[in-house]
Figure 1 (tube, rainbow, N blue to C red):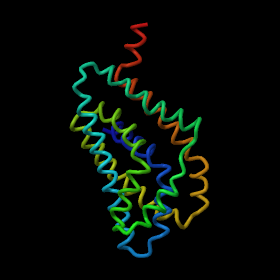
Figure 2 (cartoon, one colour):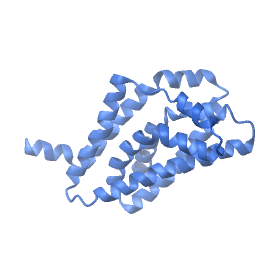
Figure 3 (cartoon, rainbow, N blue to C red):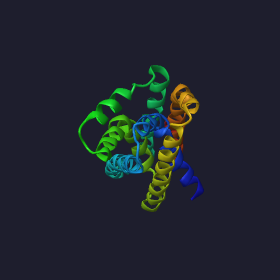
Figure 4 (cartoon, helix red, strand yellow):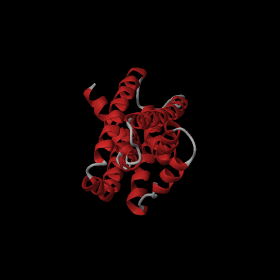
Length: 202
């Protein structure tokens, strides 16, 4: 159970470190408790849509009988991590500003920002991870995600008042994220027996 919670927390953190900067940007434009709650609900909605999408894809992939073949999906986060190290990341500030400027409710705006800025990363990490989980394990991971999302929203709100920490995250977030992506990919392939099977074939 402890290892499962740790794996879920690691998967969430790896896709959300950079999103802390976005949360700070959003929270800096809120003035009331109601608006701040709307940010949380919007983040919850956007993340929920991404998790559901990843779950649907992972469920479809369960029809592949060989577990070690599914483990090859671990290459996705490894490639994502290497790409992040080599090419860097896109600047999402423009997406945030443009979306918040639209005349929509704050909840919907934040949900759209979450999907637009985190969609590819979340799907790329969550699908290989979810494929390795049983139904009971997925429930534990889902609860872990909810706790982590709540914590990240709270931290994002607090960081608005500590710009030095935000600057450090912006400077080193890319390297931390890339490293965790690669480690998650290797973990998925290890747990699925992919490495063992490939070594046997060789």
